[in-house]
Amino acid sequence: MNGRVIKLKAWDKTGRTFVPVCSLPANPDLTIVQFTGIYDKNGREIWEGDILYWRCYDQSENRVYESWHEVVFQHGAFGVLAGDHDLNTFNDVNTGDLVVGNVFENPNMICSPRRN
Image (cartoon, rainbow, N blue to C red; front, side, top):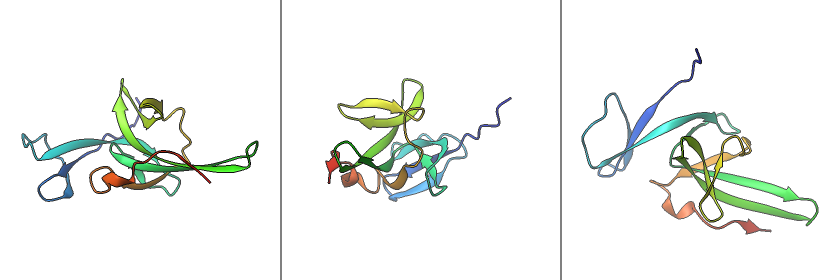
């Protein structure tokens, strides 16, 4: 049997903080999120609703691309939304990404990809 750890936490809209989930509360002010089982390049847990920062150098164009993506659970898999809300599952995502915030505390961090 796989030793996958399943963790849950909840964003409390009223208290504006994360709280541990011991049982599923019937509270409309809580948004339940799940740990993906994956860590960013610094060893930080990646949770549903986190914002991942990605940076890539394209040698052929001699440019650096940067983007910020929301971690979601869709179609039975964790991944990030990219482009026109296409889901890139964590099988397709570079695990060198960095958690830089979450959509609850930092909703303005999600933006279009940027080229430097």
